[in-house]
Structure formats: structure tokens, C-alpha cells
Amino acid sequence: MRTISQRELRNDSGKILRELRDGEEFEVTINGESFGILRMTPPPARPQRFVSADALRALYAEAPLSTEQVEAWKRDVRDVVDDELDDPYLRATLRGER
Image 1: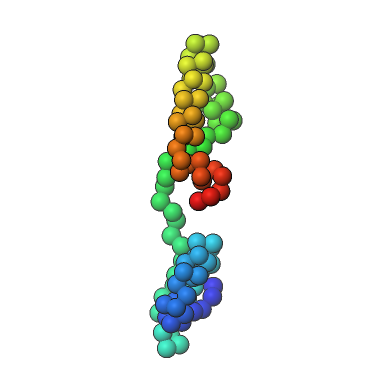
Image 2: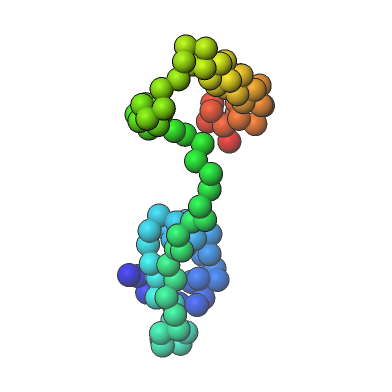
């Protein structure tokens, strides 16, 4: 854990926040006395956008689908992917422009 002064926290807040995000912890001091600890809190839970093929296989192994259902599911997945690829923000993100 690194010790930083209140002044350093104020002047270098952007750098310190990036280091917090990367797992660093800081003890903040004021006039040389410990004031508190800064550490990253767990990020809020977000919906999962990626599901591994293994997870899907395990899910569908329990309830096998008919050939018709499999084809309908594939069409649905293709439609979603096509819609997302039409999104200019997502396209730029995938290209690393954002």
C-alpha cells in the first residue's frame, strides 16, 4: 500500500484513480497523519454479454432441442449479431477506435 498526501491526491487524482482501478491501494495522509485508505470497490454487476460455447453446450445438453428449434435459435443469434454490427458505436469499439 502506497502512502500519499492529501495534496498529491488532489493534484494527481486522475493518475491515482487509474492506479486504483488497476488494484493499487493508498493510505492518504494530512500533515503526516493517516486520514484514510483508498481502495477500489467491487464493480457493479453488469449483465453478461458473452456466453462461452461450453456453457451453451452444457445448458442445452440438459434439454435437447429439435432440429427446427436449433435452426430458429441460429437465426435469432445471427439477427442479433447483425443488428449489433450495424451499430456505429459498437463497430468503432470493435475496431479499437473508442
